[in-house]
Length: 560
Image (cartoon, rainbow, N blue to C red; front, side, top):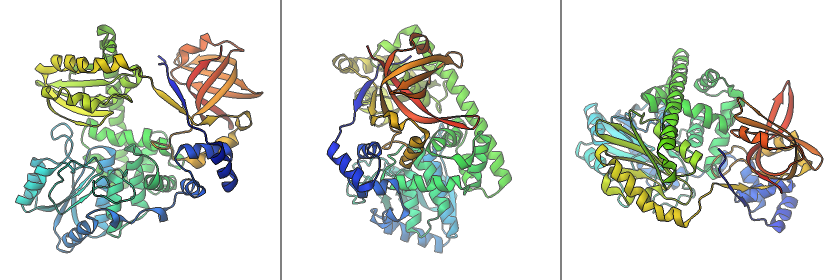
């Protein structure tokens, strides 16, 4: 299935492109791409292409950082029991692990508490605060959570436990009453960059405590890439530096996990972190307990690293199998009920795995390009994950049917929810009733933003190597998408049981190989001599030691 896509060309500024090309000496196409990423001066461009640790901001610019450091140092000197309270996703696990590692270097008495996904859910909870009290904890430091934990902060105070919140999520009107609230998104914040992830904020705390090293930066890089925060400013510096250190093999556990996953740490990039490392770490919190994922980062025992790498890999395989099963069941339900004709796809089933339905909801949203709510039912309680599309705020949509919900939370493109099983049908009907007008009055298409045209002179491996200066790619710095105009088809064929397509083209006398993943059904309709416009990213196809530039097709338009 290939949904119609809307192509958007970035605005051109020929004068600025020419000026910056002359000032920097870079190819005009690279300058154009850099301008598209909001680099408007030669200084911006050099800073972007050469991310440096010296450009990280002073951690004490974050509100309450001094208070947090003073309280932690007191706890260390008095041998108080410190508990790091994290989250079960990659960001929470890496934030917990790097802060634990730093505090251990400072000889702190410290432990980590990660809530159980199914039993406790996301964030700090009252029962956990009570348990930490019973275990002798006198200081709780939250990472990647805690910004909404007002009642938990009150209980902590009553029990004689001090609390420091470090978080990066949107702040509510009322902040927890505690020793310190460190969050670059605070309304009163003057910190120069608001888009750090949980691991990034934890790293700033470590830096303020005087512990900053390649190990911590490498762990923070994993959390930064995995949490899909914009890879600009400090995030770009952390990710770029950490990835280089990971390629040098600084983290033995990652070297082992990468090998178990069938890859090589020496070739790690942002894609490896996002699609190989992160899913295996996430699998622990999704399928079992994130405690093993934390242990994977903090253990010094190589034998245990190997055991945990194999365990995380097996959990990921289990997650993939469960995901495939739920996806097929959901698609069958959609086909049977014509659910995709509704504004919002709402599906539920007893026994669907809570840790996986969010991923499946994302896949269905991408496949049908409609908001999707996927719900797991268990003992009369329905817990769901929703994903949305640009232009439809799923959080606001859920707010409009909140009378049916026990609780919900999230943002415009993703939200979690829970409700009673008995209310499911009415919830679905009301959600679609409220949403129908938006879909009747608007046309929603996935958008492809084109960076620049691929010229025939740049159809070579050297140009691709040149573009590597833009890495690491991610949110805020996507892989460049090129417009390939008036390319002529030489040949096309499908492969992998007709799933994918290879398309060999000629562009102004230069040959270009392209591949279209999931586009195998298009191959028979393309004839030699057909003219096409393509939107594509660039990659390398290596066979028997020979490298060739390869276009990776995002969309095709036939030139009539």
